[in-house]
Amino acid sequence: MFNKPIAIWHKNIGWTLPELLVVTAIVGLLSAIAVPVYHQQLSRARRVQPRAALQLAALWMERAALSNGRYPSELAQGLKQLTGGHYTIGLENPDPARASENLQSYLLTARRDPQGKQANDPCGNFTLDSTGQRGLTDPLANMTVESCWGRQMAPIHVKSRAGKNGSLKGSPD
Image (tube, rainbow, N blue to C red; front, side, top):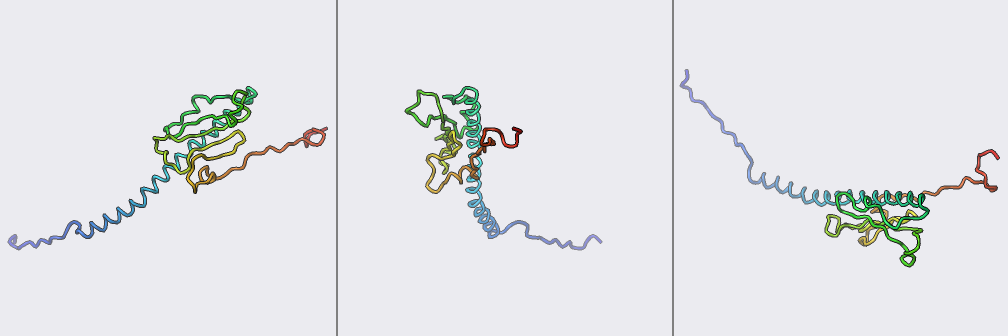
């Protein structure tokens, strides 16, 4: 009863060399495409922080101007260095000939760290002035303000509600 031969079927378990080569080629091709796109998206994501920091610094400047009647000649220390160290925010006088006078306008600049990961960023450095004008310094030839700052938002213009005689429209005279 137990003397019957047992047939053992050996299945080929594993991969053949051509199968391994095809899989390796596919993984290499996908990596060659995905890694540069990933780094480009990281660089693009790092641009959000200096743009937001410039807008925050501009708000701080406007608040200080409302309180003191003029723009401050120096930024608060907490606004200068951004987390991550990719950019630093600086305040410049757009009219250096009148540097000794009270600042009536300003130019904020987010400068890339020359040793950091954004050193070769095609957008260059970001600028924002007291009129809300956005700009770039040192961009590559094909980069525009719109492409680096994201969608271009129009400056906010407040329409006067004063009538011809100086009274507010809709208010009882």
